[in-house]
Image (cartoon, rainbow, N blue to C red; front, side, top):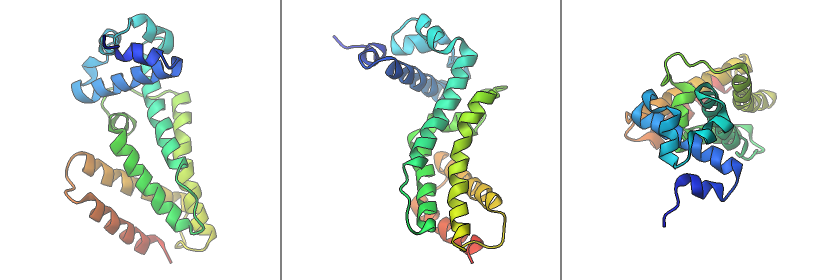
Length: 199
């Protein structure tokens, strides 16, 4: 007898159940649209009762908050896992690659984090606070480059924001299937950015 996704997750505890429900919800949102984000539909997808969702998330609004926060938590973990390097530029390039890897691996969450798949959804203050550390990691990496006197005379946080914007544009095009040679484009973008921001 095959176990449902919920039954399999239950073998591993509460966190596994929560992750399974969020992954199912993000998948339904990406493949079927916002109308699929009914608690009853998500419960049917994983094989549990709606009571489980109400217990973990409270209501649909709580589920959306949890989806947003989960996406950024995974994003932060991937960025934080990039090893530091004596050369801060190597670390910065590593972060940009981790950004892309996360977007490709977690594309359902990425669309919720940086797109607008749910009309009218605005994350609450707590969810926004959970998202903030991802940008802090990038800012600190740029600050390290500035401390090593590698950057042009510009505000490091503005450079960090520009780098984020460049990576977001690149990743958005790749996810939409508009970059037939993404690796080559990414390498070119790194060289272009280096020429603009480095001394």
